[in-house]
Every structure is written in C-alpha cells, then in structure tokens.
Image 1 (cartoon, rainbow, N blue to C red):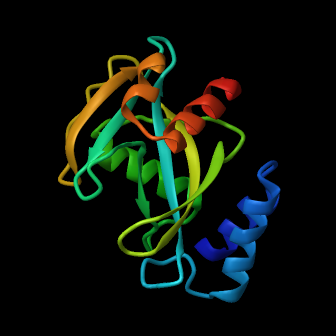
Image 2: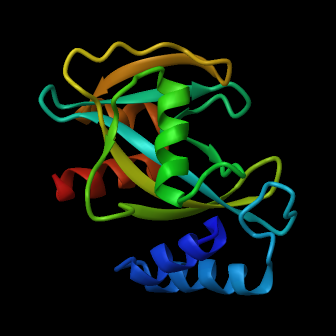
Image 3: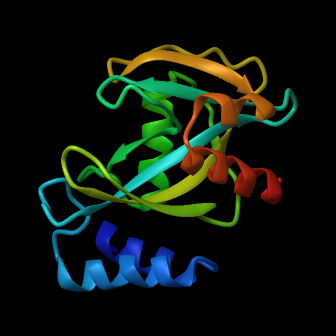
Length: 171
C-alpha cells in the first residue's frame, strides 16, 4: 500500500472534525502529489506531541524557521510507509528520543495551517516518551524543552493547546 493510500484510509477512519477531515480527503482526491512538499496547493504533514504522562509534561521544540514552540513534525518522506510512521520518525528525529510509542487509536487531531512553503494539512498524533528519556536538540530546532501541561498555553499557540487537550482526553 502506498503512503497516499494509507493517508486516505487513516482519514476515512478518523472520527471527528468532519468538515476538516473531508477537506483533507478532497485535497488528496484532487492532488495525486498531495502527500509531498512539492505540492504547492498544500500537502499532508505528520506530527506528534511528545508527552511524559507520568510527570505531566510535554516536550516542545522552538522551531528554527517559525520561531514558535510546537510539537515535533514535518513533511512526509518517500521511505515512510504510513502517516503514523512519518509522525513517529519526525518525533524521534526532532526530539532525539529513541523508543517513543504512539498512543493507540490513530491520530489525535487534524490541524490545517499556512506555512512559508504551503498549506500544511497536519495529521497529529501523540507519542509517549519512555521513562528516563533524554532529549537532544536537532538541526531544525533552536531549543527543546519540557513544559508542564498547565504551562503550554503560556508558550504555544492555540493549535498546540488543542492538541494537548485532545491528547490528555485520550490518556
């Protein structure tokens, strides 16, 4: 199965945000290249909020280009077999943490936002950090920091707060 086909299946199985979910499906139906950064009309991206539920905290990255505290995530790559795998790869690369595991149940949220390259149609997951995890800043980050759940609204935008709320509801 192709990554495109996986994305369609994931989106068809996603419950909630019906209008936005349908917009993602319509975009993919209209753009055979809708998984890739080269699609100037927008493309599917994958992200994951790295959480440490035992300590009630999340790991955010200060994005180098956007200069905002965000969850880990980015563009899909040809080697990604699934959207979930793309989200886990991005979270692992950007956090430096090996052994992350995605929460079961598929994506936590969808979020569409405009970036310098195009519209991102983000499929958002949550990844649980293993005990004793040690983070390492990647080339894509200016900083990497753990925030208590109640600190996130003070540093991140509403999209990250909504992702955290949806993640906590799933725990």
